[in-house]
Amino acid sequence: MRLLMLGAPGSGKGTQARRLGEHFGVAHLSTGEMLRAEIKAATPLGLEVQGFVAAGDLVPDEIVERLIHDRVIDASRRGGYVLDGFPRTIHQAVAAYDIAKEADATVHAVVHLHVPEEELLGRLLGRGEDRLDDDAQTIRHRLEVYHERTEPLIEYYHGRGVLLTIDGGPPVDEVFTTILDRLTAYAPSD
Ligand code: AP5
Image 1 (cartoon, helix red, strand yellow):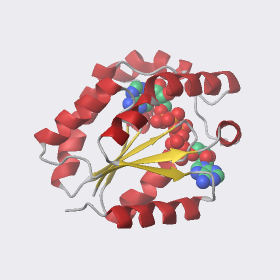
Image 2 (cartoon, rainbow, N blue to C red):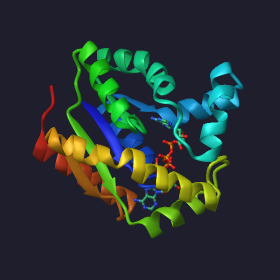
Image 3 (tube, helix red, strand yellow):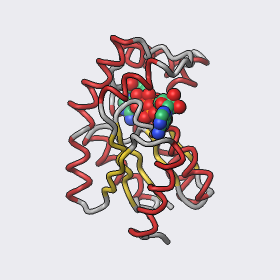
Image 4 (spheres, protein in one colour):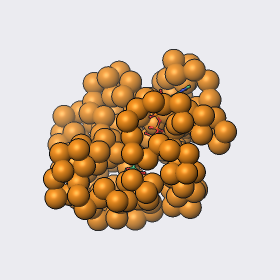
């Protein structure tokens, strides 16, 4: 199974992607987690991207595309992937398609989690993890960046007939069951 998760910060992409990865026995690939690991280890890449992540801005496309390339190819050979937090721009969506094509493993479905904005703010402020981008001001900026740079992907994938929009508001287990039901009804797997 090969899935992309799409949704605003706090919509539950990471939570659901982890569970979907386990359910289908495929890799959960989160660009946010990869970037945070690089920052924590103070690698040259981590130092390069730290300012963008801390400010709630997107890391330049080329950096993220390089970071994810080999992992997607590798995961494709081992049964598939759930991509979480990538692509986030039209440029990245084109790159994602090129990478998947290179591996002869294009995406089955794009799971778009829709959650009202007040709920997103509450979730992120209440998360209590040590994340450098979870203060109120940066969260608001991340939401603006989402609307401006990432939301156009909803139309982009809708136009390609692979978009499944799911209400991400209910409890985690309920959202997960809904995603599985919708994927079963849609059922394009190989
Ligand atoms: P990233 O780590 O991807 O952060 P994000 O998109 O802002 O998403 P979050 O992790 O905050 O939320 P989520 O939707 O995964 O929700 P979660 O499951 O955690 O990216 C961070 C930064 O890295 C970016 O700002 C950017 O700088 C950079 N970056 C990453 N990818 C990039 C890319 N491709 N290009 C450029 N830059 C990139 O849940 C949130 C909270 O809600 C949790 O506490 C959870 O327990 C709770 N929750 C989840 N589901 C529910 C539910 N159904 N009901 C109640 N609570 C819930």
